[in-house]
Image (cartoon, rainbow, N blue to C red; front, side):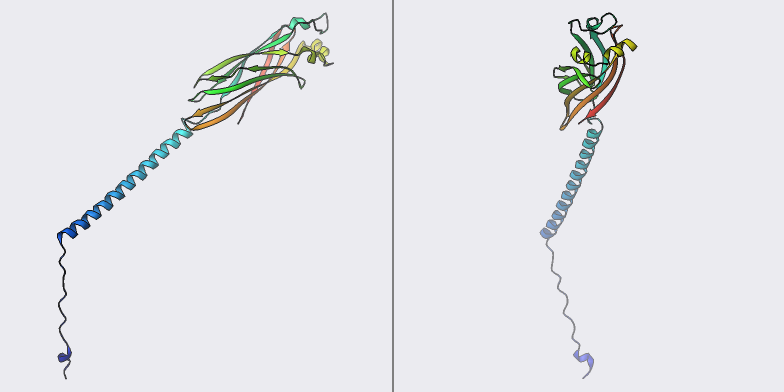
Length: 221
């Protein structure tokens, strides 16, 4: 039997017709997926741009900067009450110091401070203290305040070296510690700041004035 007799022709392939409605649905689904993808990409890019802008503003324009404190002037009243003939003595009148302090706010929001304190020290002993009222320094402005410090003269006179110090130089060296605590809030960023200032100064007994004032600032959080 020949090989040709065992070979049978294959049946022709059946091609199913594709309806217009099915093709239309396929194209419609493809377009919808493309639109969704485009919307997702647009939302993602927009969100990234907004996040970048917000972070840039927070760390530049809206960044909370540290306020600064400055000692403008210190005046002393009642020094004549401690001057005797060749020695230091107490005549019964109180001595006070008027401290003129300014707080500079470099931020875009107000710096609100709740308490202000100033202490005067003589050889490590507190000889005077004052408390200021709450207030605020407006944005990019400087707020000034006057603090009256009543000096506890008995604590100064208790030092055995006071007379020698005055007779030698005519000066009484003291130092002050001023503390201003408050907060700055910009948008959702809130920062508590405590501005501290240490000043050394000399009280000129003869001239009844303050001289050689030297101050250093320190920021605490």
